[in-house]
Length: 236
Image (cartoon, rainbow, N blue to C red):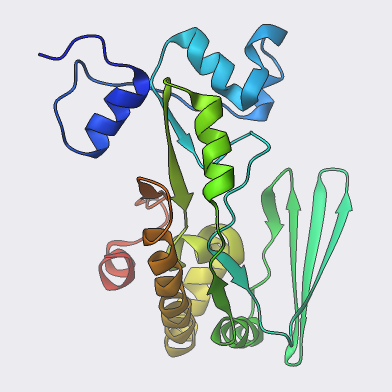
């Protein structure tokens, strides 16, 4: 039995499959929740709240802190121009390409208009991904700053994703567009999925080479919106 481990020691033991003094536990809080807490619990993007609870901290990137882990960065080809318009909580993003334009609208971070909603949009988006690349950055300085904020209360993990299917379902197409287009135009949507996956493999290589001790691909794979057939064919 190991006694008196710090949160950092305990979480590192879990990640390295080593003995620990007890089962670790933790939580995650966002800015919406923090805004309703007493002022003394709002500091350091939630870290002060975790300390108040006495839980073990597994911080996803620099969640709610000023520090950003940039690598890997997705870059569209030079032929794609991205325009972002912010009106309060409403953010409209337009990608202008030689083949056509795609538009996304989000309110409070949630999509209300998906950019890929027609067969033509599938072709435009695939062409964007065919010319896309993931670029590595040196994140050691930002990681060290996050580590200093955490101290001995926990660890930071590189949080990355989602992979192709959850990305299309959650961010790019939505459930209805995805399944209708997959049913009506299976080869076109299959080509888009495989193109995104091929590019993302490069991103995973960059994540694996990063300065962090662990990385997490965390995404929604609920049976409410991913069928067993699609899961078996693509997600697995």
